[in-house]
Length: 264
Image (tube, rainbow, N blue to C red; front, side, top):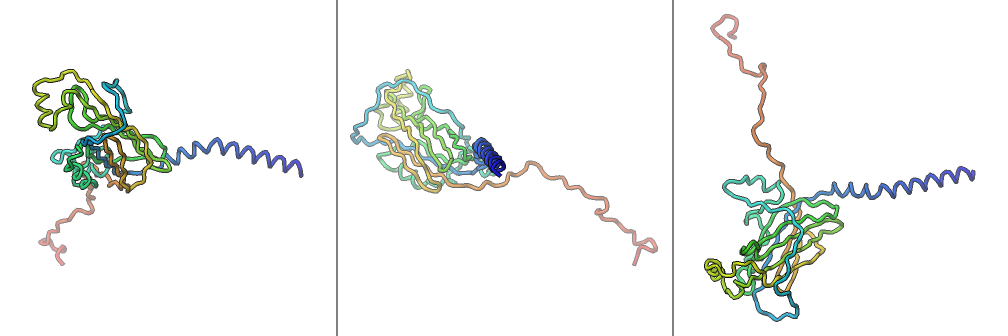
């Protein structure tokens, strides 16, 4: 009896060891299957008010790098297939499918903000906590740089998370320009041809999110609004037409009623 109990105990112990080894693999496989479509919308704006801040930023900062990610594809309403908007990832959605148009309009019309980016797209997130990075650029371009450049990352585990690596560049040649027209004038006369970044303001954060809620990430020089909502993709439409075979038995038969016996 004691020998049987010991054998049973050893068997259970081995089972627990095997289960502990397989558990990470089983969890990973389950998370890989946990795929959810989301519509993501982001707004990035620059603060233009001169409010005093205790935070300091480096002068002529060194070059930096950030995670490179997927590039959002532009949608041309004339040449692009609108059906792709419902089942293809990383296509910039037209404004009529945006969900934060009112918020973007308020920022664009406010004298203390400069709207840099307002984009929306759809993508898949898996429950494996991997970060899906998206390249973000906005504002004017100068000397190989954008006024706003960087990336946003999205991950899904128990919760959704956003990872921001956004950088606002200030160039010496346009520091004193008060309007976009003044900036373009400076560009046209060839001032400050050397692409020196005088100051860089970086928004580097990680934030836990909930779907369907508007999230606000604050910074002395930047504002980031993000909203993620679940999305149900449409079934992709197959290209071409289906060939329908017609059986010979289904084809209509012509009957000559002038022949005796064929007429009723």
